[in-house]
Amino acid sequence: MHHRRSAPLIQTANGRSLEEVNASITVPKDKAPFWKNLAAFSGPGALVAVGYMDPGNWITSIGGGAQYGYLLMSVVLISSLIAMMLQYMSAKLGIVTGLDLAQATRLHVGRKPGFVLWICTELAVMATDIAEVIGGAIALKLLFGIPLIVGVALTVLDVLILLLLTHVGFRRIEAIVSALILIIMAVFVYEVVLARPDVPAVFAGFLPNKQILGNGQLTMALGIVGATVMPHNLYLHSSIVQTRDFDRKDDKQVANAVRFATWDSNLQLSAAFVVNCLLLVLGAAMFFGHGDGLDTFTALYNALGDQKVAGPVASGLLSTLFAVALLASGQNSTITGTLTGQIVMEGFIRMRIPIWLRRLVTRIISIIPVLACAIIFGGKESALDSLLVYSQVFLCVALPISMIPLVWFTSSRKIMGKYANARWLAILAWIVVAALTGLNAQLLIQDVGELVALI
Image (cartoon, rainbow, N blue to C red; front, side):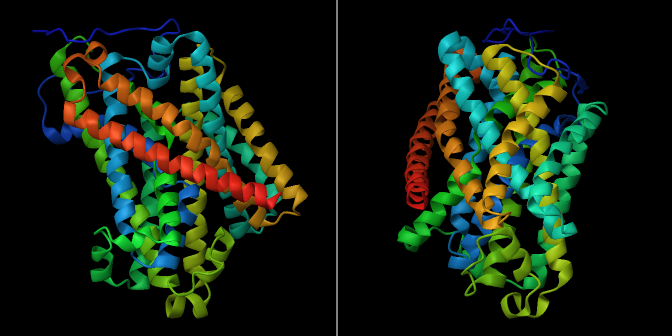
């Protein structure tokens, strides 16, 4: 027997989110064992978790460990808990309303404001793509000696990879991304084990310490928080949870979908939390006391092979594995970035273009500033690393633009019915929004100040 939900399903003029894969994956319809349900709903969380371990997070986490030891472990923990809360809301919005965040925002704010928000979100997607271009190009240089300028140009070939993946089915895309995540995790588990960290100090680091409020420590902490919660993930998750085929008019099936999407998200984000902890632990165990100058990917790569810095465990294998993980991270983020670009374009301005064209245009636009920077500064990695930092400015601006509608919609009983956020969760979410907006505003001011000083 079917039970009507409290909130009606709404369809937009441009149809369902990611229509080519929407409701394309079968899930158990009858009462099924917990593990069977979890397996069927697992996958979207992996694509979301990628954004929490992209190349942009690496320097911050490893640098935090190298400069301050295990002090900032609590910051990684708090950031991950905030991410879990926001991604839960994002998944719930998509499942209950049948709309992704872009579609819901356009529906409730109108066409003209929706267009402005689309521009801001597109800039954020492109800023994220710039980080992947830089990470991929540097990884190619470290692994194969390919010059940075050539490596940047080669990242256009990611289009071909994505075109191939679109023909294998969404379930296999999820599997490929999950496999790359496991590779990244395995690399850093291996490197951390060899580094022999101070385990009691690691666990002590999870307890907040007032030393974090020191000038240098606070700046690094803000960097970790600001780089962790990525705005594009909120759009992505609200869409890809809809790839599961369930009856949205059946309250029991909707509740089941929300439950297991939450399990999937929290498990995968726990994996991302582990990776970020490993990055910080690696920085603390190998480089604490040698942190000066470890602010580029090449410097970290070289340090992993230098016994004077990394100690007796230093080897060419460790540095090579680091570069492999960097390349895997960039490829993962490329896949999810392309999907997000399609979601925000179709949701905000209701415009559809072939996915290959969408990917090609986004990547070409993204590599223009990277190529220009590489050419002007003679292919120096330090210049690209500076560009990577400044690309986060757009993410700082886009984060509240994404968070505020998400918390607003999911806290509204008119929109969500009985699935609206509980009062305590809504209050907590608005506090988080205010705090993250303030932190990102501070990062924005800091980054702009550094850019002006550089000019």
